[in-house]
Image (cartoon, rainbow, N blue to C red; front, side):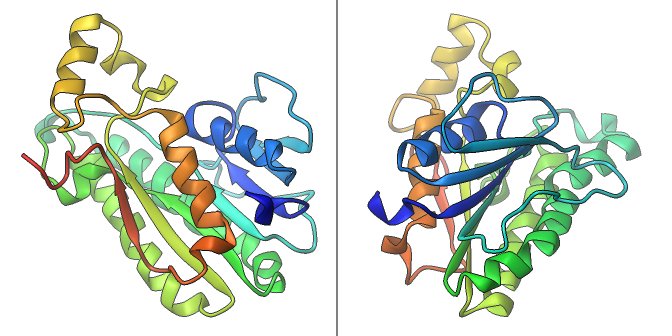
Length: 235
């Protein structure tokens, strides 16, 4: 994607899984990437500048950003699956802090630099569980449902200077999902729930994120795109 070359992109949650793969692909495309996460990146990537950040901190700043940002991806998430009766108040607050409040604060901090680009793109992440009711998903579905609402509200408010879209994956093979995929039986069962008979990969999600960051998606905003192997709509 040549339209990404020599442009500035911010990724929060870039140290593993989907965020790391997006950083890799942006770097490969010749972009300058400003990566933030609680832990350092596991590898050195050309054109990627890493800084520590905990999105659950009561107050944080995004130091070291350029004057102009062409795109922003917020990747932090959680998989804390429990029956509703066992979700504590603290569990629920943590889901909101990681998935919604962190995104809210990050976008506020990055918005001035994004607006200066003239045509920038924000990419957020939801989950298939918002559209498709699933047991034990009350906490994460509520938090990501708020992310989808934030996506549409900001898409309206920040247009035409900034586009805002959201990716809603199903279960993806990342470190975050390791406990759900740590046996061959679990992997096969998860794959067979999808019409495409496999689980998602970081590469699947990164490909969609790069499309949304690229000018080829320049007429798309306010969308929630279901990259879920058909799980959300097909039976």
